[in-house]
Image (tube, rainbow, N blue to C red):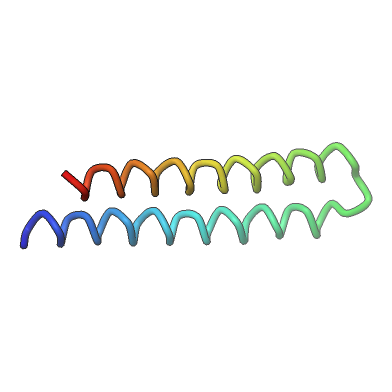
Length: 66
């Protein structure tokens, strides 16, 4: 019971952090729409947050399967 509660809390933290980073990067991308360099930086932030979400979700699934 405690293990699954901790796992759910970790997963919730991962998802909420991902949503906040996604919105922040979208804001940067919209605010600096005319600056190609900053758009690329925002695109990299979006890609890295997606990669981190998939990686952490994989770790979460592996941890909860044992």
